[in-house]
Amino acid sequence: MVPLTAFSRVEYIDAIPFGENTYQTLRTNGGLLPNDRFMSTLMLEFRGRLTMPGATGPSGLQADGPAGIIERVTVEGYHRQRRQQEKFIDVRGSDLEMQQRVYAPGTYIKTPTTISVTAAATNDMVCQILVPFTPLRMPVGVQAGYLLDAPNYESLKLTIQWGDFKSVVIPGATAATWSAYGSTTGSPELRVYGGFAIHQTRFANFVPGRIFRYFQEISGTIPTTTATGVRVWDIPRGFDIRGVYLKSGVKSTVATAGNNAFTSFTDYMNDIRINMGLNKYIRRYMNGDAVYADLASSYNLGGRITGFNPIDFCQYGAPGEVLNTRGLISGPNGNVDLYLQADIAGAANQSLVANLEEWRYRPIQAR
Image 1 (cartoon, rainbow, N blue to C red):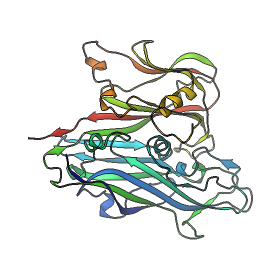
Image 2: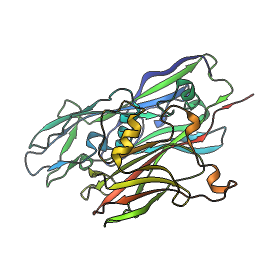
Image 3: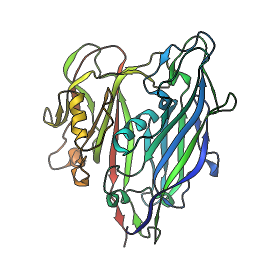
Image 4: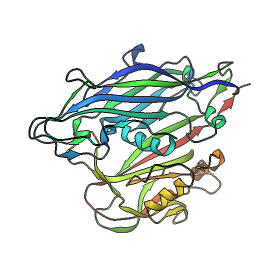
């Protein structure tokens, strides 16, 4: 693997067109990502203007802000060596934006700080979202083992599911309208940048590991009345888990069907436990403040985000600390439960989005 000539040489790839409530891919190369080099990241930059109507317009803001316009980000393709179709990125744009606040050493642009819903107000919006393929905040030698081996994929595609203005603001009788950034005409766009890795032998005979980032939304097991010791979510087993990132709050009742805006983020979970085996916890936090304190011991966080509880199993950069769930299904100990438990302060329309960073395949150096 060493020496790398570049780990993340940033290059502009193309822009993805905007259309409310549509699925869009890159405009060039049949919508496919470049597959000539290994990649460490994608960086998505949304640029557009949202203009309020002159009267009877939106009454307030949805909780996710500008990132809410990107309903979902997926990256998938057919891996030749593993002979299977893999959707290894499947995350909402707003959740990617939250996770980068934990793992990115700097602050990405998200403007304006506050979107104005005043009559006829114009809001020029920029929102930058990192899509990592490697395990962030790990030594670069570890991350290099999980680069995206794009040349080994067929039909490697980035797809954006767009939300609409109701994903960003709380609608009124008259719709807000979109145009190009800094303009009253045109359309927003999503600029796509790649972080390309370069090796002097072009990574000959090396197949990197693969990290899957995906989410599950949980609402049916969230009681609307206060309850203690609730089995909230059965955590997927069978691979290594680096982290579980929990976003809790109240879902919007006025979002367009199929979209998933949150009206607010709330800390309705207390006595948060990750149990391995029935009632045998391996992590326990009495509230979200304790989750934040645990992470702040390792990362330079900018401040706690209400309702966001990132639980990292290897926050000190040691890959051996990942939560190994491979033996919980059919190992020597048999079928072992792995689940999230919490006390719930009940209310209507509460939901939980659980994002996982799952290490499915380890690096292989072919002979």
